[in-house]
Length: 240
Image 1 (tube, rainbow, N blue to C red):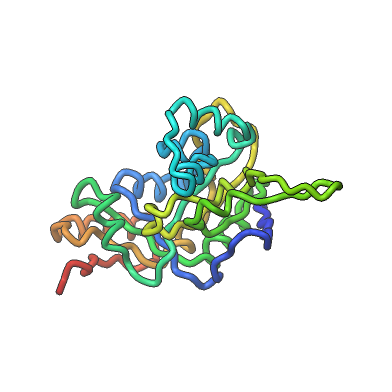
Image 2 (cartoon, rainbow, N blue to C red; image 1 turned 180 degrees about the vertical axis):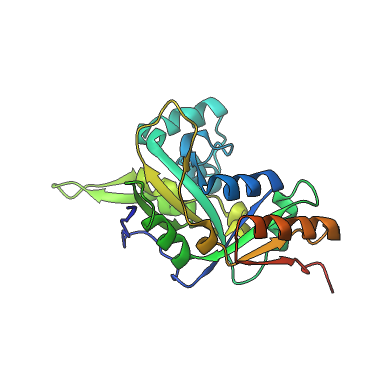
């Protein structure tokens, strides 16, 4: 059984919040076929500011940092090699921005579910994994704190644990929910959590608003063949 840690020190969304995962057609097929969700290793993210105080130094202190400098900052916290995350978008509605950013063709898919359903599915898994989730904050100043020594001196400290849940303001449109697990799989850049009840997870499947009707029909047929009960809809977000 999956174990939800539910650390209340983290920023938590409401369990009834709608969450979305935008993906291309092949990733959608992979989720259906393997009944799994993919978790990426944090220190392998494309954004060099992920899990780094570099976000603070660039956004707040306005300092220039080289890529090698960012790597050194990330190396200050080697446990990031053991953190794997699965990301969702929190929003009561579809996001036009995410359709544009993540869809490379007109075959894009968006899965809509809720935080409650996601937690339920992971808890029901036969895998003995501990997981937690947190909403991302877009304020790098929260990476900085102060500590007081016994003699009353105040010192600035970097809150490296917070770096997992803080991104630069330019990514605020993502409104990201981050589900994470920790284990030592340094030989791998990702982990696929198998054996999940994808049928229960999916409430709706939205097809790219620019997709031709034959793709919508194909998605409906695929969902039916995998016994997915969630309704398939073509997004109408581009309609005036």
